[in-house]
Length: 237
Image 1 (spheres, helix red, strand yellow):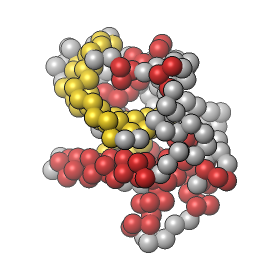
Image 2 (cartoon, one colour; image 1 turned 135 degrees about the vertical axis):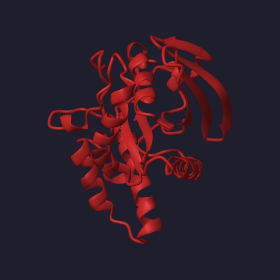
Image 3 (cartoon, helix red, strand yellow; image 1 turned 60 degrees about the vertical axis):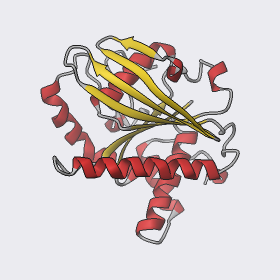
Image 4 (cartoon, helix red, strand yellow; image 1 turned 180 degrees about the vertical axis):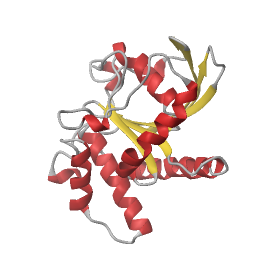
């Protein structure tokens, strides 16, 4: 799915500027610099939230997926799938089913799982065995998205509100050190249809709240500049 030394932010021809570089040998002294270099481009997708969007990890790319989560200091993962995702590992490896798993120098533990109707909230703890760093990340798994549109929107909107609260509280904690965006990963089976719709909805909700105005055309146009295929049809938004 991806080269062994890097993960991609929906890479397609002409969109190489969006590729997320993940180092095999994670160098802590360069990590902050690389993050800050990425921020200006990445922030344009979800406004106040730094967003990496990608196809769901497969069995042979789950290690690189967790390396990206750790190196880019991701705070939340959004998983968009249908109810039968765990039966079709060709679309997505159910990495959340592992209670404890090692990926090279990383140890990933599932510490909590909370069903919330149409979505499930999970908490993971990631430990770097050599550097002894420990990081926590939340996963929000919305599993009622079989077709172009989700089965219902109430649960999806509730999930977005909960993610926003996590991001807001994390930004307050980070402000003492530096003013930067809070990293968020969104993934689905192909990295464009559901992910694009989710990113578009996120941006529109934020625009409605902050500016009290929305522009669907410009939102979709902007997303497609980042990755072709984002928001696949008129009925998506």
